[in-house]
Amino acid sequence: MAPYKRKKTWWTDFSVNGQRFRQSLNTRDWREAQAREKELIARASAGKLTASSQQFARLAFSEAADRYLQGRGLELSNRSLKKERQLLILPREFFGATRLHRISGEDLLSYREARAQDGLSHSYLNMEMGAIRRMLKRAKRWHVIADDIRPLKEARGIGRALSYEEKVKLLRTAESRPEWRVTKCAAILALNTTMRGCELKGLRWRDVDLLNCMVTVRRSKTEAGQRAIPLNSDAMDAMLELYKRAQALDATALEHFVFPACENGRIDPSRSQESWRTAWRHMTGEAGLAGLRFHDLRHHAITELAESQASDQTVMAIAGHVSQKMLAHYSHIRLDAKRQALDALSQRPVAAPARAREAGYGTRNDTNAPIPPTAPPQVVDKNGRPVGTRTPDLYRVKVAL
Image (cartoon, rainbow, N blue to C red; front, side):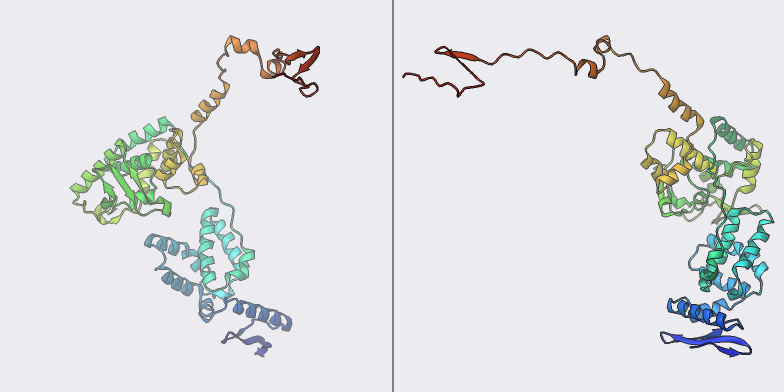
């Protein structure tokens, strides 16, 4: 089991649980070779050095990325797989033909620094590093460099809640142009149901109950997001407008999407709409709300629910939250509501009755109140001697029968 040399490089050859491991230690130093061999034996004993992982670790990064994405096809949805493929485009260009087992922590830090100079946010950099980390975990190499790579601190934006004037202006602007019709309906539904953008895009007509004014969210970000939401009058008007549009397009089948895909003016109801980003950006810019995210409409809806004195359980049932922490993250009680709550603290209490004012506080009048007189103990004279209740046995009277 001792290391041996091949062309001035130390190799190892050992077996664990009947499985043989033979590979180069990539060093010419005897002491370092011994240390690396012990590490390999420990990894093999822990099940982190299998034949399949060794083969995967020897692949070039670009080829390993293809195999990794192919294997993830059964685990991820089409949208998530598309995002994973997007995250690996630039890492594939950077590492190219470098084999996975030769990628060090310094290489990953150099890549992250180069990407940061391009102006990428910490959030996106963490997502790219996450995709690389998942590849290296499959190759059983991540634990070797994990201590060198720490996630970057991300800016935690808490979202935005609109004022009443901003909300009215947004909806009026959405009404001003017919090409914003679909985006307007999506905004109204988000403001009145707390639905996420991905939940709206995944909505099919089989999920909409127009008779009972209800919509069922079957696909969401989390399991708690799967819920039934009643439609109020505003949401119902928007849904009926979308249904009339679908009727004109002959796209009202149960499997058709409420927000169908539209490419080059051609509508395909069998696929969901990818995004309404362009229309949203133009609409919010004209309304003077540049930078407002579509997801902020969900924040606003939850804020209004919280201000309506609805219970936390009701808000979480509508919004699909699973914890008080998430509810606190999304619920932004506006300044006016906070001001009213604090103003209530400064209101003077109602004047107490005159009788209570005269009586004063209990410690003065209750503890020092005069003690009511009590009847003295009964004393009976018998033959010139007092016989009281305190000493009934000191004197006995013989009663003649």
